[in-house]
Length: 157
Image (cartoon, rainbow, N blue to C red; front, side):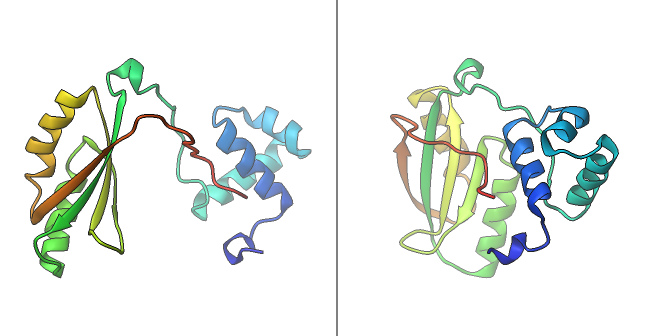
């Protein structure tokens, strides 16, 4: 068993699984599905939130309907790898609303960026105005997604 899950019993895991599938479920519905009173479920939800298992709730939006149909991943190689360059890059990325995700990675490049844009012309502007303007960027490689085969946003419990 995963040590991070040791503090969770079967009901906690069930609650988390249900919430991942439907974050708008009412406490009453949730209590019926897990077989506890609404008060007991409410207390568990408070504890799971306080302990950091539940980070928040949000709506999943359709990117294409909002003019963000093209998903791109960008490998970024920095000109040098030093703490000051890492800090400057991370700070600038955090302020770029077009960047959905940014991960420092081990391997042949330094960061992997995920973004959604309208189309290839919008990506070209994003690359020039945002990515190449980030501190320390020496080289980029872009991967435009042709088809999302699997895009899970739930964690296995």
